[in-house]
Image (cartoon, rainbow, N blue to C red):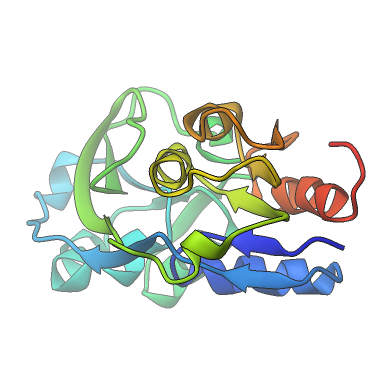
Length: 215
């Protein structure tokens, strides 16, 4: 059984690790980024009809400015984000089931998207960065990777991994999307994308690779 390397920053890393361990996988954490708050100002809530949250980090790092938007209904990318939004006092109007592309956002509404500094824009929304994932200069253990499977949760993580790792021939990549797989580049033992852009599908793929089965 090959070990699974998780690159996500907290708190997402702990959720992925717990799910992977429940599948019987041996997990190594090597975060490539640290999530920190960004300096931002909330617009007038009356200028929008709803709030789009594609990461729980928007709630976790939104700070005091987030309180000014409490009157807006939230459209959350998934249940983890929705749960945190409810705990912060927001009303959740909808919860997605398959990543950003599968969110059922209301048409012809003025939607405010609270995002990270590096993000994929959602057409028809106004995006404001409220947090950022800063690259860790020299992630501990990244130079010792060998004969393992690496879970890549985003194109940015894939690109950063490609910058850091040169010896790739015995490492398999399990990516959350085709974009994340492409960003990791070439030269790996194998590069595979999950059947759906979510953690469950990614870990199902990673488990097959860790067990030595084809993706």
